[in-house]
Amino acid sequence: MATTTPPPTSDPTSDRADDAPEPSRSATSAADHADRRTDEPSTAQEDGIPLSDLEPRQEGRVRRWVISGLLLLGLVLMAGPFVWMVLSSFKTQAEITSLVPTMLPDDPTLQNYVDLFRRLDFLQYFWNSTLIAGLVTIGNIVFTSAAGYALAKIRFRGRRVVFGIVLATLMVPTSVTLVPLYILMSKLSLLNTYAGVILPLVAGPFGVFLMRQFMLQLPDELIEAAQVDGASHLRIFSRIAMPLMAGPAAVLGIFTFLGTWNAFLWPLIVLTDQDKYTLPIALALSAIGENSTDYGLLMAGSVAIITPVVVVFLFFQRRFTESIAMTGIK
Amino acid sequence: MSATTETSTRPPRRRLSNTARNTIAGWGFSLPYLLVFLVFMAGPIFAALWFSFTDFELVNLVAPFSAPWAGFDNYVQAVQDPEVRKAAWNTAVFVVVGVPLSVFAGLMAAVLIENGISRLQSVFRVGYYLPVITSIIAIAVIWRFMLNPDIGLVNRTLALVGIDGPSWLNDPSTALPSIIVMAIWRNLGQSMIIFLAGLKGVPGVLYEASRVDGATFWQRFRWITLPQLRPVTLFALVITSIGYLQVFEEPFVMTQGGPLDSTVTIAMVIYEQGFNFFHLGYASAIAYMLFLFIAVLAFVQFKVLGQDD
Image (tube, rainbow over all chains, first blue to last red):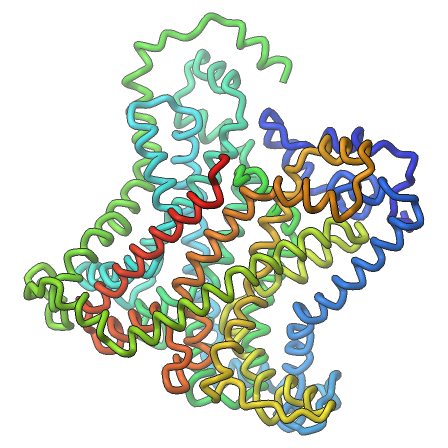
């Protein structure tokens, strides 16, 4: 497994054939596929454009190394700042602002993280963020899966209209609804409440679209067979469709969670009491305001915001690419 | 699957008796989404249009539809407002410079990752996507520190080669370019992941055929990969344009629009007019002009790039 360039004798087409997107592919096999490891040569060949096979072996391998070297430089630019941020969060303020920059902390300290709890009401913000992102995520999984099931598997009058609405609203810019939403929330007395933040986000068109695309893969025969056995759509949806859609639902859940966890503008407008702030709002107002030069504290806070997101993403990163391919954007 | 294919040989089910049941089920299942759409999207879109023709201020929150009618006053005022003009210019620069560079960088990253050492693919994919899934405020903390004129990494590095770096975010001539670079850095992963998905859809047969014809690496990229990626490129361009036209977070957390309005954007003016000054009618008018502009631009992009599809 150490060599990465596929042997030139292997036939790339035979490997690629089973990777070609097939609409008939079942949802479970898609999930299996998503979990397959990348570092096996055979998988690599399926995933990549097998350009190197077209050249003499040596040349192809050299090219792969050169390309990877370039990518590594890029990686330093893209991920380097994060590494440096994590390291800096363990430095003293004096070391961070010293004119002789250090990479590793000279005198590692947890003081910045202690300050996070003492000077900011960190646990409260963390809980607010978790609650809001969690409820929005659950809402989207339940509501948009239901709509996606209806659009993919129930032939009903008005189906085209509903799907048209979904497509049309996929690209509606948030800035146009911002002011009227604020006025609406004011009339409903939902300003400065969690519900005010959550309700407009609880069933987005993206989720409906994504779940519909996945639900289309469910064999019609499966649903018809269940109907012959007397099962209602509600029963088919909850007992047959959703269990098969666990993978796609997880993808949707993660997308939604990340988006809501990082949401900035809408919570900033709705939430006015400090003890209702989400983590990004609390840290932003802190960074712009009184603590703007307390770099250690801000670095520690940033690490705390990013960590849950990165952990979740690392677990599911294969499925992100898969799911975008599956929605058929091409 | 073999069991289910057997059932497909059954005669078609009686459609008539099912029609009503399906209609109820279909609308019932769609209801939660439709309610959210009607109350929080369709309603507000029409309300925004109405409010944009009124002098809606904070006091009118009590009875929103009794705000005094203002005709086209808000629109006329917006077109003449120097801050709106400045913001429109900055937003245009952001889009014209930022969108092509972000999408191109994403395309390059995706193509290189697919052709690099396969064992490292997921490392690069995660690393390049990391800024996309990171809260803007964490990014601002890092970048504000990196761009700090005295102790920031950028100017320290420049000092090593004897260059006295500018005060990036405090100088009106460098503030906007700095934020655009940051936005490209933050968003290229979004395009990358779209292109990675697109690359999987390119039929291997095409590369096979080109092998028979003895095409070079570059020829294959130019004449197979790029044309095959055109629909995906369109998608990436539209998504990125819509995002950049509404750019708010980056300048808000980095400079709050300053110095001297050099980084103020249309979305920031909407926020400021609406939620700092509570000129909600005026903010609605600016938002509606942005909305129309976005719709037109998306339409044009589909027309120009989507001809063959």
